[in-house]
Length: 252
Picture 1: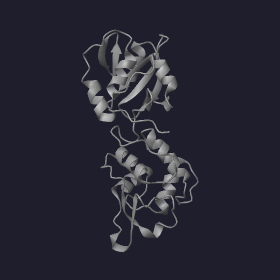
Picture 2: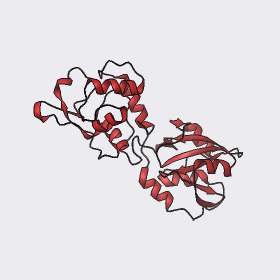
Picture 3: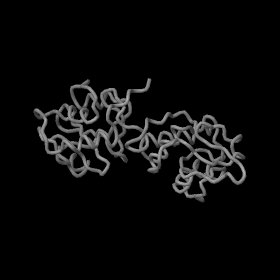
Picture 4: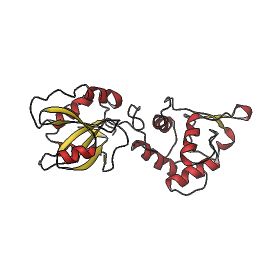
């Protein structure tokens, strides 16, 4: 079952957290309360380590997006959680004070605790929405390239997120059942103009950026993700699954 989305995510949560810098909590040891309040989610766990252990999706890599909770294995039995921003800074409690630190490494050094990772959810709420930090929901990992996957890509690219892959050659439709007609617009002849998001994808995978997806683009996409290179998007498609997982991790 999908988790409910936090009242504040992405840029809204980051703006809220940034507005608290220089203020104080009621007492020290309130790192989890500080972070969860930025998302507007209720209290559930009593410590950062409990929130980490109960998160549904954890990453031990460094985040490539902002507005996510980051965790540290400090000497305290409760560990530490802070708020990672899109510019690479970290907003954290230090005692009762709320401060902006320069980086994950500066927090790890200052708090004498190794970086553990980041989570996509906190206290039973989705706080990271796949794609851009202000995205429109985590992408379903189902192997079908539909509107959600397209919106996720558009978020990564910084495009308007309408979920549409426009003006694609209908000659490729039948051979690629994993391309959902709910997202892909199939046309023919002079109406084939190409799509901005496909041109962006093509630029990422090193092929001609004409915005028109065909076998060469799909083979390059498969090569990018290390899946078999048959140039076909099946239903379900392994390369789409890999891409959807990457989108949910905030990367291409």
